[in-house]
Length: 101
Image 1 (cartoon, rainbow, N blue to C red):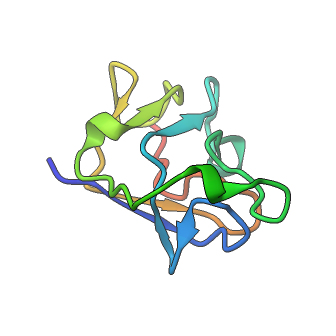
Image 2 (cartoon, helix red, strand yellow):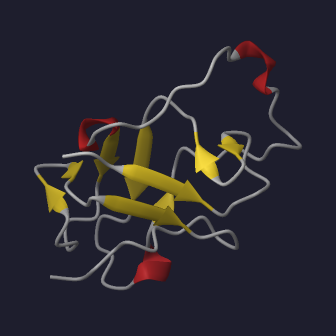
C-alpha cells in the first residue's frame, strides 16, 4: 500500500514544500485516544537542527517507513501504519490521521 506523508509543520527540518522527506517516520502516542495525544517523534525544529548532514530526498512510498506506537489507532497494524495517507499537524506535530478504534 502506498503512503503519503503531508507535513504542515513548516518549521520541521524534514519538511519540504509540505511533504516529509525523512527516511523513517515514528508516530508516538501509546495510550492515545484522541489526536492531540499523538505526535511525530521524528519532528526536528528546522531552526535548531542542522539538516546539512542529509543529502538527497527520500520519499515515503509505503507504510513500512512509518512506525506507530498509537495502539488505539485503527491504522496501527503490529506497530506499523496502514493508512493510505498520513497528515502531521503544524501546531503540535500530532498525527491528524489518527482514528480511535
